[in-house]
Image (cartoon, rainbow, N blue to C red; front, side):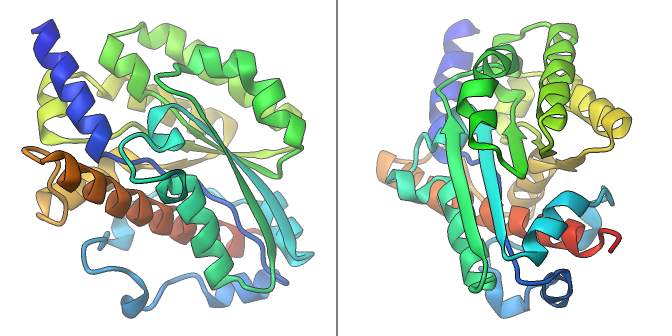
Length: 266
């Protein structure tokens, strides 16, 4: 079984994605006018219903920064934030997120820094958080985590404690936080128990009033509607799939964040 899980982990990492974000806009009203992308703006294999995003948490600090035309974002995460499986670093979701937000908000000064590290669990990210994330004085931190813990069957309680500590540090530094849940594929879902880690993130999002991006549910929807195929891929197909998926996640993250900023009190 251990060998099987390891094989699945490698094949999934080569084809799966993550999500993050950053953006800026000359005014909150401008962001509000661009909340929902036109159908032509979203690739055919990246359709996710609005009802999937049930979190109505807003991002008032980010919205104020955007009103002044500038936003600094840090994407903190593990392998899929780094861009494992993609054809190049430019195809990783933080880079695609920056490109998407700049495309949609051309008058804003947007910076998205990628602070992904291979197979990094939340506790390790907390240790490097000050130097790798907070030193940049970000307005927004997108924290992708939970996959490394689930794959290794690490303690969900320890994961929750690390999340709590990390959130306190990010919010204490004056940044806003967006949590990104683990990945999904049919094969890994049969072998790996993701739910305890997803629940820990959901609990923290409620307690700390931080936004959560449901990557697990987004990817499950894409798989179950046959928009995304992750199993049985050749190396070339896996790289192409990873590129396409990273881009899709970035577009969906941009969609969620634009909405959260536009809905913030003014």
